[in-house]
Length: 218
Image (tube, rainbow, N blue to C red):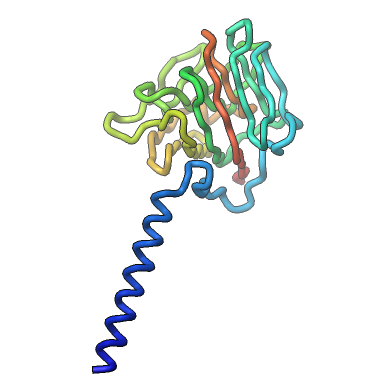
């Protein structure tokens, strides 16, 4: 009898602890959710303080705020880019973004800029229903691949995770842990260039970025 009573108490305590853990997890705020694990040996692209290592293209607004990188439409409401000073070819990039206002953005790779005219490829970052994670070629062939229908989409006003892997002619993107596209393209395979964040023209755009980490491959 004492052994059964002890076992019963252990079971009750275990269930209560599990219930508390689940409740705590479900109640965690958006700000305290764990970030996307960065690839091993990854280094930060953004230092959390200023735009050291980046170049602004255009008149749109780019600034550091509370450890986050913010892009915001300026008075001209034109295209704007924030590009790395360093050239990248094969790499894996992880980051988080939060869209605070409706509007289009993106992550360019193996790209080059002349003012605000960009040549290269973009992994789309856009409001729900607008192909976030797809790959678009600027001033060229347009959409190379769009995510299939039915996949989880961007969560507006919340932090979303994105992972982009570019090796040779092979590009893969993930949104919130879900693979969005898997592409092989000969022109991409022969290029190299900067990584750049975009503000689309039209105004009304504000996106926050954090935990931008890159690992070069090869």
